[in-house]
Amino acid sequence: MAKLVFGMNVSLDGYVDHMRFQPDPTLFRHFIGEAEAQVGSIYGRKMYEIMRYWDEDHADWEPEGAAFAAAWRKQTKWVVSRTMASVGPNARLVEDDLEGAVRQLKAERDGEIEIAGPNLARSLTDLGLIDEYLIYLHPVVLGHGAPYFAGPRPPLRLLSHQRIGEDVLRLAYVPA
Image (cartoon, rainbow, N blue to C red):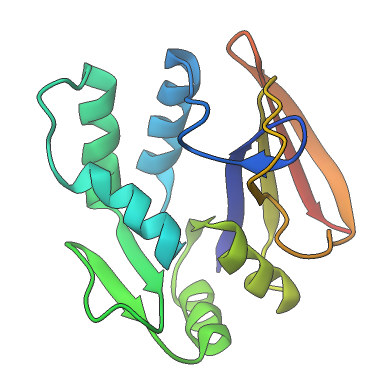
């Protein structure tokens, strides 16, 4: 059975914003390894639109950018949206019955499936489907934006912590 993991970069005040802070090279290499090991990813529409950046090669990429793009492209992606008519390569659209579709994915696969997007994570948290929460805590204060927890914080228990690079702390939590 697959394990659903919601992980994102988070500011000290609890916000996610991919345009305001970027991972350093050490953290980026960590994310490459995560992407290579994952069975796939489930995206909300907004996060999927951001991540589509990796579908096309860019001349200014460092080798790490190309490595992440290769891992991301290889993954199966499921995109939860009621408004999108189609999705890109190696992606499937989930339009109806979110709970049934995700329960089926968990039952049919082994390994880790990433959950990407706070609003999607809230829906899956409310359904009791997320197995682990990863907070990549950065020493940045944003003051506003999309919160990591789009709804009430579920009861959690700290599983582990790990320093990545100079400034990031990875906190792993499981439902309590």
